[in-house]
Image: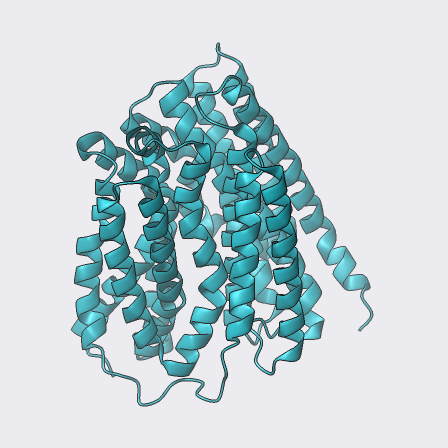
Length: 455
């Protein structure tokens, strides 16, 4: 049993690692204009700065959780922390955009190794159900604070000392977090030593994601290359699905009765992050390169969109208990759609001030704050006996949607210096409104469709 003092130091360490994993999804966005200027990167290069992290994070979440079940989560978390820390140093010292993208990919692998194991180790170290609920609540709250903190922290660091400090920030935090994890006593044996990890499925899933994201980013420069990569992505995805059906221990062992509801929940979650992270990718560039705001002001202006996510968790849960998770998800999607339309209006109307923009960003963020916990809860309810499975599937769908959203938005909007960038961005926000409406319709009709299924 872990002593009380050691347990809380372990809790802080693991929550700090989880915070960094989510912080690095958004903290880099504010630094993109300065990275582009200093490393001479275009829109494709900047998209890869974000997606080189998001793609391995999305593709390796499932397999890293499975590996932790087999060899023990302590080993996997330690490996992830060391890899994340070393990659952060490489990012901070990167002399070219290519080196930065490669280091970000290693950072994403480290993040994928860390994320599932942080919660697993916290649960294993808890002495009783009461302590476990308290620790898990702290873990969730700290993770929820990472997304709104990202743009603000990034803005402060970039304005004070340049974009490289965004990556140096992770180094001391990881170094301190390693100490209690290293001191943690090894478990007597792995939790699921009989399970085999589907390595082939993991490789095919990551290959499909990498090829698809690359195809989207490269479509402007070479249509033929993009088409070849898209075909390769489709083949890898089909291979992954075939492998999942054949192996005895698939990455997603979803019971037949749960496949459709979990699939719908993951679809809505993926569409949500597609719009949210794609939109945030554009906004931070518009604020700095079009409106000429400082990095700190750009980060602060995204707060109305990001802050509702941690603040609305409890109210959204209460609303879901009254009207149901699916209807709450539909309501959140509708609110986000209204906010997206308002953002598009302010981007094309020069008379609209920052107060109007902040209002619509708050509406957009409120919709995301209602939708996120509701759709995650809906996913968890599809497999009540295996919450880890549903959580892994939902997280994978969300990270995949975010990576694809950044790639698509970067490809369509083009370079921030090109003519019509703001107009293209506004059109993309109108498109996100349509997608949110579609997600809302899916969430609204899902309970009706599931009730009609034969038992």
